[in-house]
Length: 195
Image 1 (cartoon, rainbow, N blue to C red):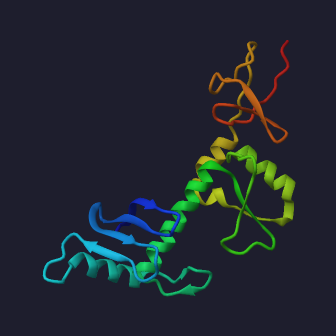
Image 2 (cartoon, helix red, strand yellow):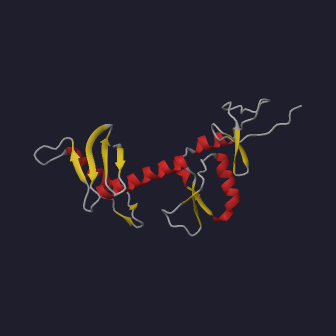
Image 3 (cartoon, rainbow, N blue to C red):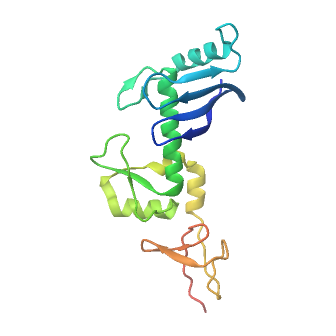
């Protein structure tokens, strides 16, 4: 069974609305007003107080392993699963905007970001590993990166033509830390001697 949370809209107060989808079909609207208490589920097939979708979702939740939310492992409940999924999706959004890392001494859900934002690329990952060495526990962005794609991208490098534009995006270059990169896709630029 495929269970997804979509169309999440969050407010700063902790309130949110979302849609729960089961096997590609809208199963329920989920919301919380941010004042404490359980989440509200509005099941699409509820008739006379009963819902087959609710029963299927609860059975699926019971079959899931314990989750580490918040900071302790416990049996999943619908509310804990929804909260953990919202947190996971928010972290993924943050990773799209900046590189996030965990260092020795950081908690399991604590991470550090870079100011100004440092967009994640394989080149940036290499630089971080070199800079932080054994103090680096994790580059959080790699949770959301396909490892096979990461290896393939790491082997690709851009060059600069005679006019000063990159071979990958026909863009100018900039520096990310001490590494020269393409402004368009952030690929590392290899400087070749012009003969």
